[in-house]
Structures are given as C-alpha cells and as structure tokens.
Image (cartoon, rainbow, N blue to C red; front, side, top):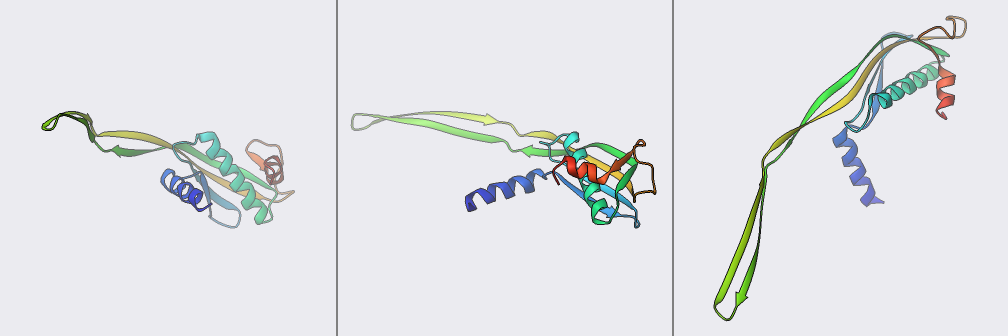
Length: 151
C-alpha cells in the first residue's frame, strides 16, 4: 500500500489535481475558484465548482444559489525538458591482446513544453426557499445538484 501512496502523492502535487475553493464575501455571497491539471478539461472544473457551490450552500442552510459572474479560461504552465546525451558501446576482444571498441552517442536538445491548465472563477449568491423563484436562468437547486452526483 505504501508503494502506491507515494506515486499518487507525487502525481497530485506535480499535476495540481482538480480542486475548488470557496471564499465567502458576506453571509450569502461567495467566490468559488476551481482549477485543474493539464490532464483535466474545463467541463471537469465546472463540475467541481458546481459541487463546491452546492456543498457550501447545504452547509450554510441554503436551498438555492444563483450565478452572478462567471469567468473561465486556461493558465499556461511551462515545463523545461533538459537536454540529454547517452552513449552506448560494445567491446569485442579477439585473441589475447586485440580489443575493439565501438560506440554510439545520441543527443536530444533541451525543449520547453506548454501545458494549459483549466480554471474557473464563479461568484454565487445563496438563497433560501421563498427568497428566489426556482427555475429562472442561473438559479440552481442545491439538493438537485447533490442528488444528481450521489451526495
């Protein structure tokens, strides 16, 4: 089990696993920021942000949230790949004193790889039953989102 935990930890810390964070602006308004790794797409980050909004709403006793502002995009990250050189050879001995050596050297130049990581920042306002009309554009039911995702 320990052998499995280290690679998973390293992968998550290096790739920046899918995450969302809530910052409350007041009792009813929050900024929910989501980000993914270069292996994630924007749809996964959006899903994570919606789940975070629904969970936060439920924890604070609200039944609905409305999206007030929504920004999304990609953060470029650059990874430098070092130049490599490898040499391999064979040594052949014939007789007592004759030795032949044959070598091959292969070089790969340094390069830079661009990785795009999706991000989303959404401002939401939370409401209780009777404070907002359900079903209008941009209004989401906390319970519906959580139920649809098995929470």
